[in-house]
Amino acid sequence: MRQRKISLAWLLALPILLIVVAAAWIVGGHAENVGMKEIQLAAKTNSGEEQQGPHDSSRGHPLDPSPPPLNDEDSRTKPTRKRVTEMGGADSSVEELAASSPASAGDAQSARLTPRIAGSIRGLLVREGGPWTRETLPQTNTVMIDLVPNGRPRENQRANIEPRPDVNGAFTLEFEFKDLEEGEYVLTLSALGSRRWAPVSVHVTPPASGITFTRYDKDPRLPLEFDVSDATTGDKIEAFQTRNVQLTPSDDNGVFLQTGPLDVNAFTVDGRFQWSLWADGYAPAFGDETAFVRTGDKRVADVRLQRGWSTKLLVLARDPVAHQVAGARVSVDGHVVGATGVDGMLVVRAASEPTTLQVEWPGWHCVSDPLQPFAGKSAAQRGQITIVMMQK
Image 1 (cartoon, rainbow, N blue to C red):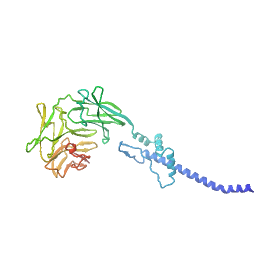
Image 2 (image 1 turned 90 degrees about the vertical axis):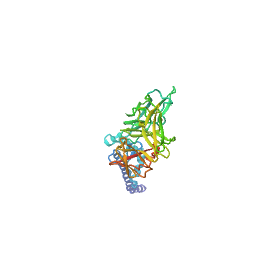
Image 3 (image 1 turned 60 degrees about the horizontal axis):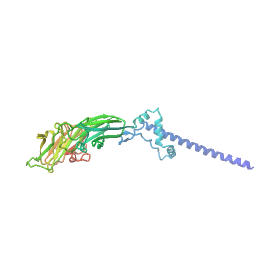
Image 4 (image 1 turned 120 degrees about the vertical axis):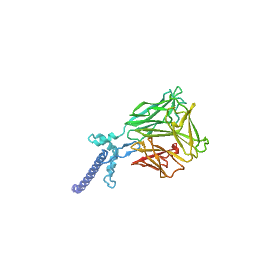
């Protein structure tokens, strides 16, 4: 009797056990299917067929897009996300799938877009006259070397150039750009003063070393002198400031504008250069090497300052890199005062600081008000040069 009761109990419980096992099998199978769906969607998105990945502006290359988010309101997906994470993470699972599947052209394209570090670019600055000495070293911030990857002009890097003494008491000037991605780059040298440098631009692919920029300092030089006076009274003006203005255009990198202290001993007799000069209460004056006349063992410029306001415009258009704009019409307080020359520049004068300054060029417009600081710097901070950037 007792054995019959136990068998009867097992027979009554059997349907319940079957229902529980079946339910567990269904739930487990659905979770695995959702997990596969998650991985497949992620792989499809990673191939680029569904959407484009975000761009990391600090590196300038497309990143692999992450898997599309699952619906958090669907409780069936939560165990799957946790399960995939426990197996090594959803992202690593997707990366492994993309790397191991040769059948997907999108996956291959994504792999090609992944940046690879190629190495460094190293070089030297040398002088024609021999090793660098403390007396012949360029002044701080008067020589700059910029590196720009082809097709990405806004990803500019500037070299840190510092003299390093050697065992003989001379100095070496070296530069290095580290951990560069694969691709072609353009190096551009810009320097204040009229000493010649060669080359001023070079195409290079990392890794590369031994790149040399040479300064030719055997060219004859004469010191410069400014004779500054009041244009109306003729009174001599002793307190004034000068700046060297240097433009270095590059087809690949755009236009480099350098302004800095004017070294009166840094200019060769036949070198070309620009300068600005101003004193308190007077409008700035602008000129170039043609203002100087040889007088004995020096070259002298006669500068007569007038009361009022003035600035020198530099009009640029970005397409895709910045270039100088010739023929842009300039108006001050509604009156046309001239047009920019082939160098994109024009000196503008007025009796007092104007209320409006307009620059017009067909099909283009100014990015900002020319009378306001550009990129955080005023005209006075750029040697009285006003930058006007235009866009379509």
